[in-house]
Structures are given as C-alpha cells and as structure tokens.
Length: 217
Image 1: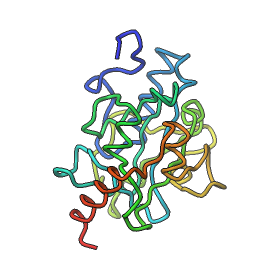
Image 2: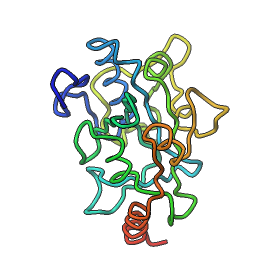
Image 3: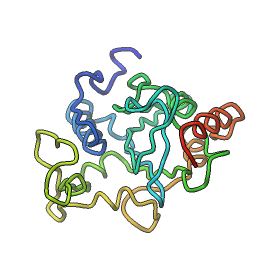
C-alpha cells in the first residue's frame, strides 16, 4: 500500500489492549476521523458473532498453529472502497495490517461449510461514524463476580454517550431488529463486499480439516 493511500497508523502505533477489540476499533475510527475524515465514509465496523456466541476465526495471534480461536465475538474494521480492493483491519490477526478482504476471507474466515451450524458466523456491519456516535461501554463484561478484571482494561476512560453507559450487547447481537447496522450471514457479507462467497472447495476443506482437528466435538 502506498503511503499516501494509508488511512490508519501502522499496527505498532495503534491504540491496542488485548481482549478489548471493540475499543481498539473505536480508537482506530477516532484516529481516522481526526486525521482522514473523508475516509470515514468508506469504513464499517464489523461485529462477528452468532446466537451461541461461538465463532471460529483462523490466523489469530492467540491461536496455535493452524487451529482456530473460538471467540464469543470479535470486532474488525472494513474499508469498503471497491469489491476488488476492500481492506480489513484486525489488530488481533497474524495477517498484514491491513490485508485484503479476499485474503482475510480465505485465511481467517475460511468457510461455514462442513462445520456445525452452531459455529456459523454472522456479521453486524455498522457505518464507522454511527459506531463512534452510538457505541457505549462501561467494561462491566470484563469484570469477575468479585469486581476484579478478567483482563487489564485500557488506560483511557470508557466510551459512553449522553444517553447510554453500556450497549455493547446491542452490537454483538445478531438479531436484525436490535441495534445499529445490517446483519449478514458470512456468505452474504462476502458476496456484498468482496464479490464472492466463502464456500469454495479449498476454503471449505481447510476449515473442516483444521476445525475438526482443533475441536473435540
């Protein structure tokens, strides 16, 4: 990517706290709004989850070899310039930052074919500006019952709005009647933003092989 085309800092210069992916993406959007405001129109925040909150993703830094990480939810940033060159920003991925959506689809999403339905991915796609205006978190989901932190929080104050202190669940939910943005199946998402589906034989076979090896069910 040419320097003049880059809208985000390098991975090393991004605000990042492990296990706070929604806040990492919020801070990335905030940076772009301040530095490259026009580019914000191309950006969409993508929440990945499902009803069971069990979604596999490959090429995650916390993964082992070629086995997926099973997240309850994950959040990435999509730059939808054109289906041929849409980009994904994922600070938790081993892939380049950014990488093409087509590469992310092949290496990180792989396919919902040949894995059990309870692990099929859905995606809530929210315009970045709407996310910045409406997202709120009090980080209560990262507290243990005794009040201690499950993982250390970011050093900056939590995001909130004048109306709300916590609405993270509305973004994680894959109920189309709830929250902001549009909810997609994985195939519909890739057809919309990459011009292809996830059901190619190679991606389906790779997902099935590594997922079955990683999971005991």
